[in-house]
Length: 253
Image (cartoon, rainbow, N blue to C red; front, side, top):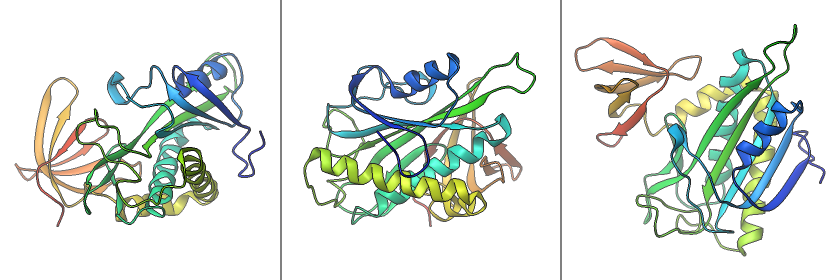
C-alpha cells in the first residue's frame, strides 16, 4: 500500500509477534529502506527493558516505522517520532497529551489521567561495510480504547476522543502521526524545543533508577541537545541521564 508521506510502503497485518521485530529482521536481511508496518494485535509486543506491551486486538494503534539513519542521527529520529505521536494524539482528545522522559505519552488532566502510549527504538547496521547501511526502527503503541488490565493506563476514548469505530479511530491517529512525522523529519531543528515545551517531566521532582541499581533524586531541569535528561540532584550537582527509569514524585509546577 502506498504511503503519501514519503516514509516508505505502508503495510498492515492482523497479527504478528512484534512490528519492531519484523522490521528489524528485514533490515538484518538487507532491507534498510523506509517502511511502515501496522498490526491489529501483537502477541509478543515489547516495551523498554524487555517489558511486555499488552493489547487487545483492535484496541490500540500498533505501528513501527523504519527510517534510514546513521547512529549519530538516531536520537533525532526517535525524538521526531515521539513528538509526532504526541501531537497526533493531542489533536484528537480533549485532554492534554504530554511526554514523560524517556519514551512515554501521558495525560495528567481530565477524568482519566494515566499512560496513553509509548515509543521503542532499535538501531540496526551492517558493521562490515565500508559505508554501512544503517537504520532505526521506532515502534509506537497508543491505547485507543480502554484496556482494564493495564494498571495506570488510559486511552484516547477515555481522554475525549469521539469514537468513530475501531478501525476509523486508529486510521485517523495513524494518519496524523505519519503526517506530523514527515514534517518533523524535514525540519528536525524544532523537535527538541517542542519536546521541552510538552514535557511532563521537566520542572518535576523525580526519582531516577539507573543501570547498576543506582538511584538518584532531584529535579528534572532540562533536555540536552541529544535529548538526554538533565537533573539537578539533591546534593546540588548536575547529572545528565542517558538511560534510566524516571518516577515523578510530584506534579510539575
